[in-house]
Amino acid sequence: MNLHKYISLFIFLIMTACVQYHSPERSTWSQYLRGASFTDMTETARIAKRPVFLGAGGKLISSVESPAKMDYGDKSQNDTAISVNYMANLEYELYDALRKPGISVQRAGTDVVIILVRDAIMELNVADISADGADTLKTITKILNKYDATFMEIAGYTDAMAKKQADALSLDMAQRVGVFFSQQGISTTRMFIVGRGSARPIAGQDDIGRLTNRRIEIRLVPAR
Image (cartoon, one colour):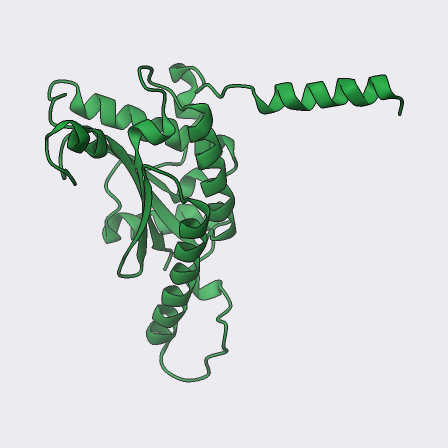
């Protein structure tokens, strides 16, 4: 390959890397999100969704090989032990990969929760995912595709100032993230997508608190 071709390839790679992500037209979202559930991810909802999840190639936590073979105890105890180890490893990988402002990873029992402040992943004044946000979501995608014996709830939240449009705005954020994940190959049969408006604030109502309350929470639960 001559120098001209090397230069052309280099320019092409730079231009490709700089392409801004844009969510597809809203009219197509139902196609990307076919198979997702638009309800809270309760235990009952997960049980109801499990046949669809398995039919689409999903796997339960019991099919994940334990680090140490367990020839003792009942199935429930073994599954719990495997879940704890599996989710601990998932939490560590997410925490290690997502050391960015506005992003945190937390444990709640065996569940893992990723909190993404809106301005960390979306354009400031436009309802769309930013370039940095797309990079962050791609990082999350790689890890979630590796730890695929999990269900996920993608929940959008707003601050208390947007009362009239709170539900619509929060659902819009959650759906955009769901569409992005679907485009990146995450099975929609794992997804529960909800918009909770200004419910469940995690900060005060001052300027900084409102920015924190505008967020996406991705809750990951072992598939059992």
